[in-house]
Length: 476
Image (cartoon, rainbow, N blue to C red; front, top):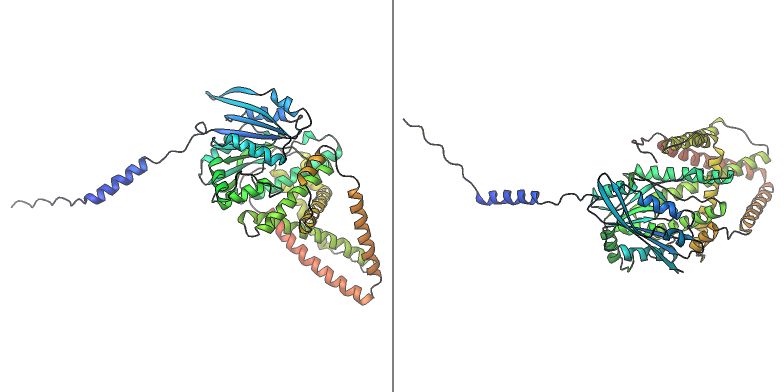
């Protein structure tokens, strides 16, 4: 008896058609663009940068992935910046790994620009808007030779990235005097801690700093449309980079810090210029967190401000309580007071060894403790000045103040008036303390030392959490 023939399988033509269509879609998905296939325009706003602009341009032309165009926009300058930069005007070629790059350098003297750096940046955007990416570089920044390559590869790896910033560092050799060496190294530690915080937060960057950042021009256009702006940068904020970063984030884009791209930025070499820069940065940040307190990009700024408040409060409170206790013979040393400084030294030491190319002097700075405390005190003054300026609605052109300070102007006897004010307040408080009744003094000391203990314990726990967190191989 013949075996029955097997039945032919039933084929559902609709299902087959859907499978074919899905396969075709997969085969036609766009492949990731190569760094050679995109067009990059570098925009360099330059204000009185005659000593640094040549090194900046040469670092860009020496990249492993040279931008297709470089627009050097000299604005409000009174020195030889334009004439130094003009030596590079024209077409440049560079061959890297058998690929030849052609870069057109265009140097433009904008003359007096009312909106200063913001005006120059917007002029640069108008020149670069038909490119794929805009590389913003300050006139005193020197890029590592692979910085553009790394930032471009990273931004091409994820279409959600609206901008990516390099890891900023400082060249200690720029400092000549003892004061300059102290200021540069302190800024080096300040930026190192800030960069590491961002790297460990999934590389989310709250602020795409203008020192060296690669921006997606399509994302900038979308941001402009959503905010009804004619230009990507506006004068509404003291720190235009922060506002643009917030707008990119609000438009659905990510703002990142590169894991590998590096740049050496220009430090503040005087107390006056540092004060002007830090007050401008802090004032701009305060304005933003008061305008948009719940914005995701501002969480780190909230933490920074809260940390600065507690740092100032704990130190002032300790000095005041110690002086008050000594005045009535009630001062007693407790061993645990040494714990927070020891933890602070260990944390600063951990930051020191996380700096790429750290030196023995960086380690000594961390172990010395006192230099870091002095710089923290200076930052506290800048912090208080910024908050006072914003809360009192003081009209002040912080851009002009920083520019003037960097060129040796400004200052005067403002610092002396501030010092006299502190001395006067301390004298009044001291006189009031000495005229209190003993029971009241005892009660105030008990409450004060308890409050200080609580704040110090919380600060120490916060430092310990940073001390023991994994750096996951990152260096800053």
